[in-house]
Length: 94
Image 1 (tube, rainbow, N blue to C red):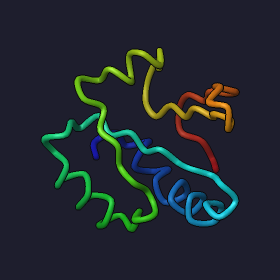
Image 2 (cartoon, rainbow, N blue to C red):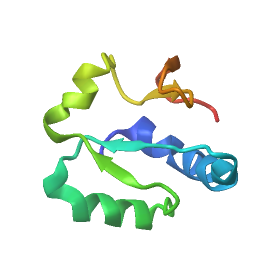
Image 3 (cartoon, rainbow, N blue to C red):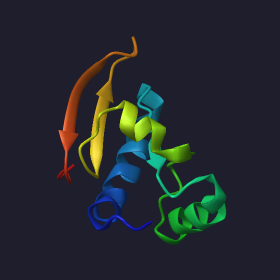
């Protein structure tokens, strides 16, 4: 809700999820706003017409730290075996 590059790429990521979900693609959108801001995040997604994305909440930024992300946005590409196959840092032109 506060990361400008994340907000900028939100419509494209939402469209990718909507277009490819029947092929098995799953976009996991991770919010660092905290679980206490669940309503804020859900309203934000609705307002920005990103209803194909299901928000997940990174309590205490543990996933962010464990993933060794260096900034936001960071996109991780994970195969069906759960292996990280690529990482992209910064806003992508999807």
